[in-house]
Image 1 (cartoon, helix red, strand yellow):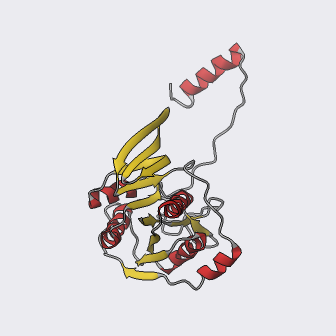
Image 2 (cartoon, one colour):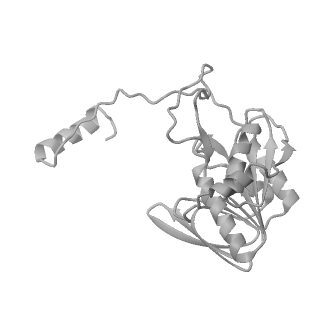
Image 3 (spheres, rainbow, N blue to C red):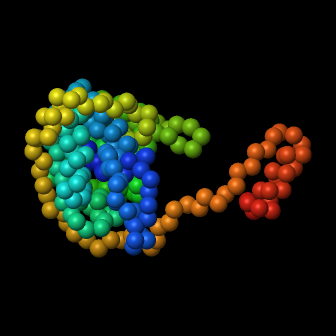
Length: 248
């Protein structure tokens, strides 16, 4: 099975975010970057599919040379090949999806796996745009996946429940927490990954279709109030929601 996994480099979830001087991006000083957590499930699922069906797992990311850090991580996890689509430009979801589509066209994978979203932009757009560009069926927010031959059955989360979707290979699957438990790389594999080759490809440049107008840290001026289940406090809660929060 020819498996392509798309990954991204994001700030660690424990990072204390500071808005940069331009007011449109974060200050990278002291920021630790990691493999996007949702992409970990995609990588693990790709490795499990290879272990079951044979084949090869290729990981690809879009970005500058710093993106090689996460490619080393997935190589240590067991990925066979790593590729980076290099760019120093600011990019949006379409830019990423368009370049991933070009890689997919050259590799002709049986399945494309990627996280449902990156935890920095949180747009959830790349899987859908990629599917449109490639003309492939796509199932998002997948928490269960069964593949028999070319038949695919995916379980996904929906509001208030779960949904089972059937499709066929080739297809695109975006992964959600609960699909599997990603493995941890072993020290010998981490050391070996440092010397493994990473293929470099120049990105197809394009003008961003979305631009960041401004960025700001959420206000901390909110005052917490603790209320009980007494009639008096319930009336007070309704009053506050109506007069202060203005949501009822």
